[in-house]
Amino acid sequence: MKYQIVGKNTTITDSIRAAIEKKLSRMDKYFVDGDNVLCRAVVVTYKVGAKVEITIFTKEMDFRTEVRANDFYDSVDTAIDKLEDQMRRLKTRFGKKKSGISLGRSIAFENFQAEEEAEEKDEVVRTKSIYLDPMTLDDAITRMEALGHSFFVYLDEEDNEISVAYKRLDGGYGVIQVENKLKD
Image (cartoon, rainbow, N blue to C red; front, side, top):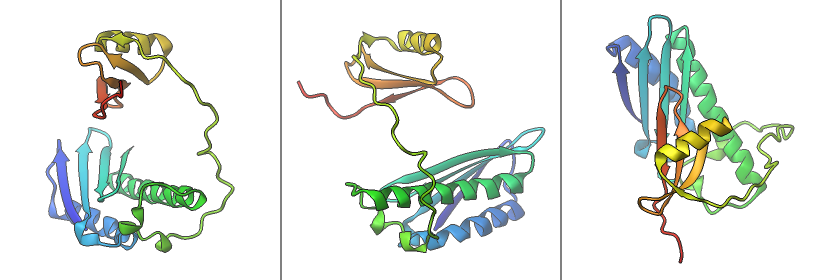
Protein backbone atom coordinates (compact mmCIF):
# COMPACT_ATOMS: atom_id res chain seq x y z
CA MET A 1 0.00 0.00 0.00
CA LYS A 2 1.23 3.48 -0.85
CA TYR A 3 0.84 6.06 1.91
CA GLN A 4 0.20 9.78 1.66
CA ILE A 5 0.14 11.45 5.07
CA VAL A 6 -0.83 15.11 5.29
CA GLY A 7 -1.01 17.40 8.31
CA LYS A 8 -3.34 20.35 8.80
CA ASN A 9 -2.49 22.66 11.71
CA THR A 10 0.41 20.32 12.47
CA THR A 11 3.69 19.05 11.11
CA ILE A 12 3.89 15.36 10.37
CA THR A 13 6.88 14.15 12.32
CA ASP A 14 8.71 10.90 11.67
CA SER A 15 7.10 9.36 14.76
CA ILE A 16 3.56 10.30 13.63
CA ARG A 17 4.28 8.98 10.13
CA ALA A 18 5.72 5.73 11.52
CA ALA A 19 2.74 5.24 13.88
CA ILE A 20 0.18 5.76 11.10
CA GLU A 21 2.02 3.53 8.61
CA LYS A 22 2.47 0.78 11.22
CA LYS A 23 -1.21 0.82 12.18
CA LEU A 24 -2.37 1.01 8.55
CA SER A 25 -0.08 -1.86 7.55
CA ARG A 26 -2.51 -4.25 9.23
CA MET A 27 -4.94 -3.35 6.42
CA ASP A 28 -2.53 -4.74 3.78
CA LYS A 29 -3.89 -8.26 4.18
CA TYR A 30 -7.28 -7.14 2.84
CA PHE A 31 -5.99 -6.08 -0.58
CA VAL A 32 -5.06 -8.41 -3.42
CA ASP A 33 -2.70 -5.97 -5.13
CA GLY A 34 -1.49 -3.75 -2.30
CA ASP A 35 0.98 -1.96 -4.57
CA ASN A 36 -1.89 -0.33 -6.51
CA VAL A 37 -3.78 0.81 -3.40
CA LEU A 38 -3.32 4.39 -2.22
CA CYS A 39 -4.04 5.30 1.37
CA ARG A 40 -4.35 8.97 2.26
CA ALA A 41 -4.34 10.02 5.91
CA VAL A 42 -5.07 13.61 6.91
CA VAL A 43 -4.22 14.57 10.49
CA VAL A 44 -5.80 17.70 11.96
CA THR A 45 -4.88 18.86 15.44
CA TYR A 46 -6.96 21.07 17.70
CA LYS A 47 -6.32 22.65 21.09
CA VAL A 48 -7.90 19.56 22.58
CA GLY A 49 -7.67 16.37 20.56
CA ALA A 50 -7.04 15.41 16.98
CA LYS A 51 -9.00 14.32 13.92
CA VAL A 52 -7.82 11.66 11.50
CA GLU A 53 -9.36 11.22 8.05
CA ILE A 54 -8.32 8.05 6.25
CA THR A 55 -9.27 7.29 2.65
CA ILE A 56 -8.27 4.09 0.86
CA PHE A 57 -8.52 4.21 -2.93
CA THR A 58 -8.93 0.95 -4.89
CA LYS A 59 -9.87 0.46 -8.55
CA GLU A 60 -13.47 -0.50 -7.79
CA MET A 61 -14.32 1.41 -4.61
CA ASP A 62 -13.03 3.92 -2.10
CA PHE A 63 -13.26 3.53 1.67
CA ARG A 64 -13.28 6.58 3.93
CA THR A 65 -13.59 7.33 7.60
CA GLU A 66 -13.14 10.35 9.81
CA VAL A 67 -12.60 10.16 13.57
CA ARG A 68 -12.09 12.86 16.16
CA ALA A 69 -10.81 11.93 19.61
CA ASN A 70 -8.93 13.45 22.52
CA ASP A 71 -5.85 11.37 21.73
CA PHE A 72 -4.21 11.12 18.30
CA TYR A 73 -3.40 7.42 18.66
CA ASP A 74 -6.97 6.61 19.75
CA SER A 75 -8.33 8.38 16.68
CA VAL A 76 -6.04 6.36 14.37
CA ASP A 77 -7.03 3.06 16.04
CA THR A 78 -10.74 3.91 15.86
CA ALA A 79 -10.45 4.98 12.22
CA ILE A 80 -8.81 1.69 11.24
CA ASP A 81 -11.45 -0.27 13.17
CA LYS A 82 -14.15 1.63 11.26
CA LEU A 83 -12.51 0.90 7.90
CA GLU A 84 -12.31 -2.81 8.73
CA ASP A 85 -15.97 -2.74 9.76
CA GLN A 86 -16.94 -1.05 6.46
CA MET A 87 -15.14 -3.74 4.50
CA ARG A 88 -16.61 -6.53 6.64
CA ARG A 89 -20.16 -5.19 6.10
CA LEU A 90 -19.45 -4.96 2.38
CA LYS A 91 -18.35 -8.60 2.36
CA THR A 92 -21.56 -9.59 4.14
CA ARG A 93 -23.68 -7.58 1.73
CA PHE A 94 -22.01 -9.12 -1.34
CA GLY A 95 -22.34 -12.58 0.17
CA LYS A 96 -26.12 -12.16 0.32
CA LYS A 97 -26.69 -10.95 -3.23
CA LYS A 98 -24.92 -10.72 -6.54
CA SER A 99 -23.75 -7.22 -7.41
CA GLY A 100 -22.45 -5.64 -10.58
CA ILE A 101 -19.32 -4.49 -8.73
CA SER A 102 -16.46 -6.97 -8.81
CA LEU A 103 -14.43 -6.13 -5.75
CA GLY A 104 -12.76 -9.53 -5.79
CA ARG A 105 -10.02 -8.06 -7.98
CA SER A 106 -9.08 -5.56 -5.25
CA ILE A 107 -10.19 -6.94 -1.91
CA ALA A 108 -9.23 -10.30 -0.42
CA PHE A 109 -12.56 -11.03 1.25
CA GLU A 110 -11.34 -14.44 2.44
CA ASN A 111 -9.06 -12.66 4.95
CA PHE A 112 -12.01 -11.34 6.95
CA GLN A 113 -13.18 -13.23 9.97
CA ALA A 114 -16.70 -14.61 9.75
CA GLU A 115 -19.32 -12.11 10.86
CA GLU A 116 -22.43 -13.07 12.73
CA GLU A 117 -25.64 -12.73 10.76
CA ALA A 118 -27.41 -11.01 13.66
CA GLU A 119 -26.62 -7.61 12.23
CA GLU A 120 -29.46 -6.65 9.87
CA LYS A 121 -29.37 -2.88 10.28
CA ASP A 122 -28.46 -2.42 6.59
CA GLU A 123 -31.98 -3.45 5.58
CA VAL A 124 -33.97 -0.98 3.48
CA VAL A 125 -36.98 -0.03 5.59
CA ARG A 126 -38.54 2.67 3.44
CA THR A 127 -38.65 3.61 -0.21
CA LYS A 128 -39.72 7.05 -1.27
CA SER A 129 -40.27 8.52 -4.72
CA ILE A 130 -40.09 12.24 -5.33
CA TYR A 131 -40.73 14.65 -8.13
CA LEU A 132 -37.74 16.93 -8.65
CA ASP A 133 -38.69 20.56 -9.04
CA PRO A 134 -36.20 22.77 -10.86
CA MET A 135 -34.70 25.19 -8.34
CA THR A 136 -31.57 27.08 -7.40
CA LEU A 137 -29.03 25.85 -4.87
CA ASP A 138 -30.17 28.52 -2.40
CA ASP A 139 -33.78 27.29 -2.68
CA ALA A 140 -32.65 23.70 -2.15
CA ILE A 141 -30.70 24.65 0.99
CA THR A 142 -33.68 26.62 2.30
CA ARG A 143 -36.00 23.63 1.80
CA MET A 144 -33.45 21.26 3.36
CA GLU A 145 -33.21 23.48 6.44
CA ALA A 146 -37.00 23.79 6.64
CA LEU A 147 -37.36 19.98 6.57
CA GLY A 148 -34.58 19.50 9.13
CA HIS A 149 -32.72 17.08 6.84
CA SER A 150 -28.99 16.79 6.30
CA PHE A 151 -29.36 16.49 2.50
CA PHE A 152 -31.80 17.46 -0.25
CA VAL A 153 -32.15 16.08 -3.80
CA TYR A 154 -33.22 18.61 -6.44
CA LEU A 155 -33.13 19.42 -10.16
CA ASP A 156 -30.71 22.29 -10.75
CA GLU A 157 -32.49 24.90 -12.81
CA GLU A 158 -29.24 26.22 -14.32
CA ASP A 159 -28.10 22.99 -16.00
CA ASN A 160 -31.17 20.76 -15.59
CA GLU A 161 -29.10 18.09 -13.78
CA ILE A 162 -29.93 16.11 -10.66
CA SER A 163 -27.99 17.45 -7.67
CA VAL A 164 -27.78 16.79 -3.94
CA ALA A 165 -27.21 19.60 -1.44
CA TYR A 166 -25.88 18.44 1.93
CA LYS A 167 -24.63 19.76 5.27
CA ARG A 168 -20.93 19.17 5.84
CA LEU A 169 -19.78 17.91 9.23
CA ASP A 170 -17.16 20.67 9.43
CA GLY A 171 -19.77 23.36 8.70
CA GLY A 172 -21.08 24.83 5.49
CA TYR A 173 -22.74 23.00 2.63
CA GLY A 174 -21.69 20.78 -0.22
CA VAL A 175 -23.21 19.85 -3.57
CA ILE A 176 -23.01 16.56 -5.40
CA GLN A 177 -23.86 16.78 -9.09
CA VAL A 178 -24.78 13.82 -11.26
CA GLU A 179 -22.73 13.40 -14.43
CA ASN A 180 -25.04 10.87 -16.08
CA LYS A 181 -27.33 12.47 -18.62
CA LEU A 182 -31.07 12.09 -18.20
CA LYS A 183 -32.94 10.21 -20.90
CA ASP A 184 -35.51 12.33 -22.71
